[in-house]
Image (cartoon, rainbow, N blue to C red; front, top):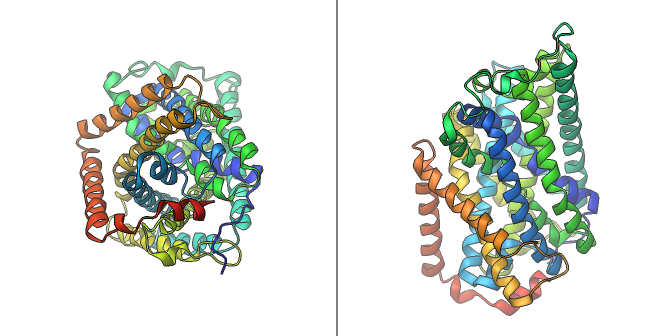
Length: 455
């Protein structure tokens, strides 16, 4: 077997992978939770969060263009902050991908129940694990093509929803020719019906929604022409967030009072149903299932590549560094899928709570990953100075973004509903630290071998 990944992901693949991770269950299903907390001010939360994510992605993109390696931010933390930082970041991100995979597969089960209410939710979750596992065991180009079409379905749907919603707001479509106007945005308690506190409490949900967009960096090790592909994908992040999050939710909350959307499941399903198109709800149900499968597909990809990278550093079992003749880390895929089966068990035991529970818990892991990107980037810039794809405004932009992430951590502890994220996150970091020293992971490290394998 070959021991190296293969650069077969084209600019089209990388671009749509990034977009696919931005448009997942966090938008279609998780947005209802954010709206319930913040009301119309959720738009400001997504807008501000989107700017912060853009800064993070530019920092990651600068390092990825300079050094496109497998493991991405884990490898950068290893090189610029030390082996222990890289180890913690890599395993923390793998857990994040497993958790997001559980949330996305759970979303598949939730929406499939709308068509088959008599079948238990866990059956659909298990089916999605089998399907996505099969796709990820094929050549990476198959994964890239699958993700492209998954994402294309989502993009077309969101654009049509925005256009249709705009027609309802200004032309009266679906409302007897009477324009709905924008009054719903401020007529039910104003822009901040739950105060500024409500908007702030929505930030952890926003963070979860954007989580996974760093897949751009994970794919750098398998990207053809990364010096062109990565900048193109990173630079498109901000305007996509503006269109697909802020634009879509603006239209939705103009059509429906925010306090109704927060209690009626996915706002997207409700909005298309109001357009009066026959079978609209079923169509959108199909789209959000596709969106969840897309997110699940990308998390399995990223999780398996992180295990591959950790193995090459001596921070995971060596067997996980083996790849197939097609350049796929098969054992990493299988181990990630085996852990995702735990999500099937949770859906059997707690079918009504698992999605929001995972959103809360995984916010800590997301904040950790993004913080390590920014901190590693500080060290990177001190070592190399401005490179070919620099983060503008550094170091001020990085400092502001890091302060934002620390504030999100504070808000996780402020709310009783999300405080468990800090407990679980701290326990996981402690467990990893103990394993690092007890099992001699640090003593097995060889930085020279790491650089050779990553290259």
